[in-house]
Length: 178
Image (tube, rainbow, N blue to C red; front, top):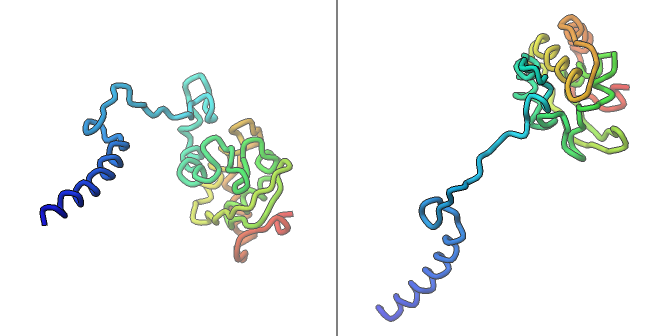
């Protein structure tokens, strides 16, 4: 039995030791004094804040964007290629008519779209559970960040679109928005 156990132990221990030696379990196998420190790439200057010290990121719209929208559209509104369109520099976000973005936020969006010569085919969930104020704030943030320069969205505009589209079932498609 001892003769079988030693080779078996060697066969198991050698690959296990090799595998674990590749792991960087700090203080166990190796230790580095210069472990990297995470620094967020988003700063006031790049995220829509101003360099003067009062940050637009503290606005209610920026907070809602960070909590609800940034996982898909990214923190700087650049979107995800092929899936989620960018909001930075978006013609839809900069259009004087805010009803399309309001309808998209309220009821969602699905299907392929083309923006700036690129195709996107993601699904945006409906965010109708957000209050009219939250929707107005987040769309105002989007329309005034990352190079966008459209006007503010009002609570009254959101309420009017919510009332007009109350019977809408399902997400919008590009054809329905046009």
